[in-house]
Image 1 (cartoon, one colour):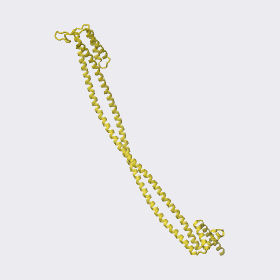
Image 2 (cartoon, one colour):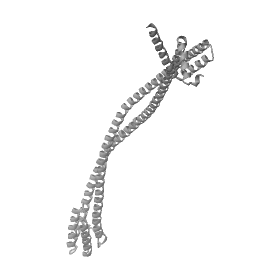
Image 3 (cartoon, one colour):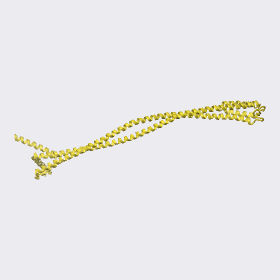
Image 4 (cartoon, one colour):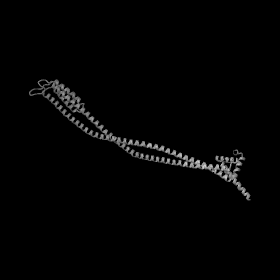
Length: 380
């Protein structure tokens, strides 16, 4: 019974070691080492040399791992420092962007307010300009009307002056005016000429705006002269001449009043325009000042916006640089982990072989024999 149990345990142990050999042989290093050990054993290589080779290989893996650990730690420390510096630069840039945005948040509303004030002033100026234009146009109409009035008065005065000239140039001796016992003599032809002249003047004056009343008076004089020519006596002639002189005086007085009214309108217009121009100058000054302030604000906004755009571009570039650097560091850490895992696997393979050589040499020899029997030419 004990013998049977012992055989079962030995069989189980051999099966376990065979599984271990199969696992070792799945790696390139394990298969190479098994092949090398098998060849050395078949050629009579001292077991101590085989052990020494494995110990040296294990030590080399340990040394390589320590060096790799140190290099990775140093590299990751540099990565941490680089990423910390890049994050700090990004934080500084974000802070600067916040400061610039705060400046814009202050400047833009002020600029917009100034623009609104300028538009309001421009509307007020436009309304004032409309008043100035209307006032100027009205004053021009008054001036044109006065000029027309002056020409009409001049016409009537010329009609009266011509009528009197006809008397003075065509009088018969001894004199036009009666002096003492002297008599005035006017022929019927002259009186008829005067009547015709004044009748024509009266008709034209009746079509005018300002001298229609004088036109009617001249018409009466023409009728009187027409009736007087039948008699052409001293009394009637004198009366006609006196009426002409009186009408000329009335015309002169009326024109003096018209001129005075025109002068008053001119002074009132000039005084009113002076006030309007003062208001216009104020609007122009306000608009000019607001324009300068708006331009100054716009210049500051443009400069701040340009700086902000530069900061945003730097943030984008710096973010990309940080992400690239983080990617490099993560890739290096991944590569390190892969090397460590591979090296740990190789070390475990070497350690397993050392353990097998120390405790299960017989199983190893049987495993090699089985491989040779199975036709593995790498062990011959």
